[in-house]
Amino acid sequence: MFAELIFYSFLAILSMIKSLFAFLIFCIIEGLLTFGGNMKKLFSLLFSVSFFILSTNTYAGSHSHPVTGEKLAADQTFTYWHGDEHSSHDPQILEDTYGSNIARDLFEGLLNQDADGNLIPGVAETWSANDSKDVYTFNLRKNAKWSNGDPITAHDFVYAWQRAVDPATASPYSWFMEIMSIKNGGEVISGDVPPSDLGVKALDDYTFQVELTASLPYFAAMTTHATTFPTHKATIEAHGSDWTKPENMVSNGAYMLTEHVINERLVRERNPMYWDNDNTILEKVVVLVIPDENQGLTRYLAGELDQGPVPAGQYKKLKAEYPEQATSFPRLCNYYYTFNLSETGIEAFQDVRVRKAMAYAIDRNVITEDILQAGQTPAYTFTPGSTAGFDVPKVAFSKMTQPERDAMAVSLMEEAGYGKDNPLSFTMIYNTSESHKKIATVMAQMWKQKLGINATMENTEWKTFLDIRGKQDFEIARGAWCGDYNEASTFLDLLTSPSGYNDGKYSNASVDQLMTEAKTSSDSSKLYTTVERILAAEMPVIPIYHYAGVFMLNSQIKGWPYDNVEQNWYSRNFYKVAK
Figure: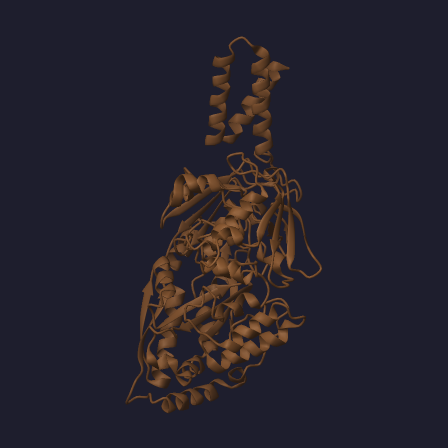
């Protein structure tokens, strides 16, 4: 029995080839030296190590998927592309899609989403709301642990949510916690009351309760957002802002951070402490930062990436050549340009006639059909048509033909006092991307040809771009938004006065009131239609198009949630089949 145990333990160790298991081998050797002739203690140590190895690498020696029966690849590594360095992987600091993709692997919130976007348990096994939908209770699983072995409790969520709204954290997403209608959220953010007054509490170690100021039927869906993920208090207090470095980070997701080279790569590997680790197949997830989309595609086709970009205008060609790899599907995202309407903006943009003229002069079909060519749809409203329960309203300028819009644009500019004899000049900014550059170029050309506008294009690196927008240090800037949850308010709340992502500082009392009413209305769709019509009349932003999910994906990678319009994906649900 003892000899057999040593034999199978040795085989299991050989199959891993990972630093974690090298450490375990060290533990065995240490046990031999420590216990000497005490065979009973040594037997116990070896048994524990063997059980740990086998239980934390369920599929390491398996040749087929346990459900589908597909033959698995020997190397379970998923490598994918990012066009920029992400803003952060600190859940309460990050503010972009790239960072959120990483955070969903490193951390787990109360709830997750399945492949269709439906809510499923995360750290919370069950959840409920009172009849008025203003108190939500989450019952946490007792087998959830941090990567250092500490149990995850309701106190961890209390800490993280208070941290998100604490002015000292300076979270760029603190406003999200306010639109969740959490009691005292706005007051904490403004510094009027301490973070301890936020309407969250631990009823006991495994029961987390949230008190709202209004009935919010979709509140549970908002807890899949990274800002609401738990963070490890002791680690943050010990390391400060350095807590997100691989050597310091303690997390609770299916993967742990093992390497991060800024502007180059980030690596995450399986977390053996994750409560559902037995059902995880991918061993490692690698993201490579490649700012040039064409280079990203080249490296994908060379086999360096499992997921890569589709540069603007190349989808049809790639789909014909690689039908099983080039993909396009509806996404819950919009693409727009926002005017700086704050005191730092230019005077011309305070004139609604100028804003409307510039919006009307954009031929969106040229952008979606001639430049992008991958299933994107022209946008005349801020909210995409793929949003659940949202009927896209027919706003006035969407009913015109493009020649009619062009004629109206010329007339509006002349009324505002601009034309060939008095051309309007400004700078338009966008973050570095070949696609963004192409879109900005054609927009500038349309404005020049139709309205005599001189638009200077300026591209900046992603983090700098976010900083410029956040400080209102721009004239007109590219914007994009992917829904934080599948409801129209995730888009329209962005253009309310208190929104932290309202970088153009648009403010309309009617919009604010309507969006407040929508949170408790039994039929919010009519209110959303009214808001969209106000936006079309005042044009604080120029809707350009609504996204499609467009990328190249190695046909060996299985499990991608194409039917989840929010595209909240989790690497633990992927696996790589053999060629």
